[in-house]
Image (cartoon, rainbow, N blue to C red):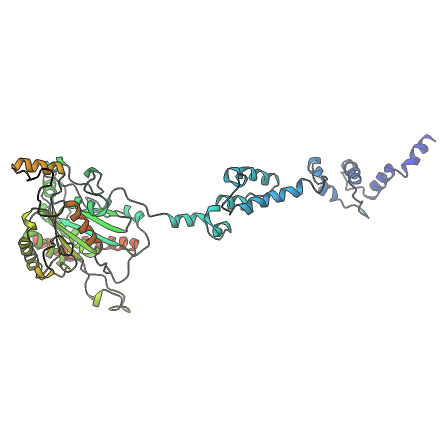
Length: 504
């Protein structure tokens, strides 16, 4: 009776239902012990939650689907108006305030870390809200994700500014590729080169035309000028070809002195081995100078010839020889020959400027200036270089009393005086025994100041016409590859080799 008494209520209670489930779904073999225990865990909880028991037999995968930690199952049992309704509102709030100008402190970037932790607790990836908050200053396009902010910032960055010159051709006459990182894919550029004898001030002039002023310390110039020690021992500062590009996309090429006696002395005294194609040191020095000049005549828009006295006939002979040995301009393809090439398919020749550096007061006399123009025009009569018609000292208002037709044939000639400080000028006047009439007024110089003349020269050089160097329009990077190909062709030129053989 005791057994029947205890079992009688079990027929209508939970014990009866558990036995009926065990009889209905005994489970797979080997899991008789684990199956009932799982049923005892989940069935009472489902009854407390108010869930209905599924009709029919229970699938064996049901315990696997419902096998979750108790802490995770307790969250959905919270009231409906509680936390789950507030969290989506907090996630949308930074997204709405991210693109506004008046951002609250809660939506500022320092507080974005809290939003990330909330997203991580919800099991979501913190991508879009954080991305919009961090790039809220990029505008509507950046906030919508249409433009990559990294690419947009790169396009807005100014070109990298060079602090000093770098090597384009080293002292071994080898091409260097370090200038490539400063060049861009744009075609509005001007290439300016310089030639001159030793000690004429080429590097100083190029520094003043590119990035420096006469008031700065010469040790800070982008092209290193001769130091006092090098001047005393008669050496040269520059070697090979130096490269510098300005923010205005003007490329300046400073070169070693042509026909340099210091380079020849270095070859002889140091027993430096010559290339096999050269037998004598002076032949090698002259051929180096011709290679550099022929290279500049091919890849530059403007070539400045610097002199410190008027004038050296050998320098004009050297220029005409380099013009004769200049490599020909690469022609266009057979289909476009004569249409997209240079003017009428002719050879390319740059503008050439004769710069008279360290000019004296007498050279600024109008009569002397006229004689200088006539001499240069006579020496360059048979040259194809564009040596006149593109630069004028009369247009610069340096000689306000002279008319334009005073110079019959005005060549590209410009005069620069000595670059001296006020203290040096005072010492010079004291040493000569001459004192000005009024001590508070500056002495008579006969020409404008050095700084004003350099500014006038720079404005005229940068205003030169930028003719097409080859049959196609070159970008800065294309110019670099074109110049490398021209330099390699100059070193392997059969005309230069034949001329070297005639010299030796």
